[in-house]
Image 1 (cartoon, rainbow, N blue to C red):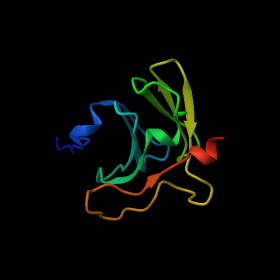
Image 2 (image 1 turned 180 degrees about the horizontal axis):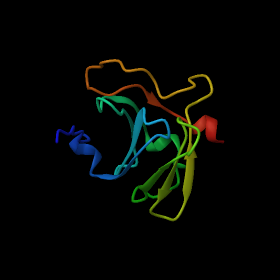
Image 3 (image 1 turned 45 degrees about the vertical axis):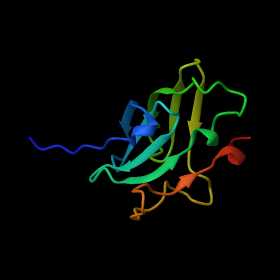
Length: 121
């Protein structure tokens, strides 16, 4: 059996959960630093990184982070995060983007970052 491995940058902390999108094209990965990575399922290449600033209000404790991630059963670009404080956030890409970015090699290996704060208010 062959497998693939993706490990977040050391500064991000450990992976807390991961799940496939409903169309099996992406894998959503939540990390202890609050970030969420969108990986291409076939290659595990990062497509996007969603900063915790995109969905956390600025007054939340830095000790709050996603502990579970669940993909929408019929919307492949939408998922929910369950947080350590009991909160839940539903996240989808900005309408102008429509998806979680394209696969582009960047210097640090990460895809585009999204700031969803304006879209969530």
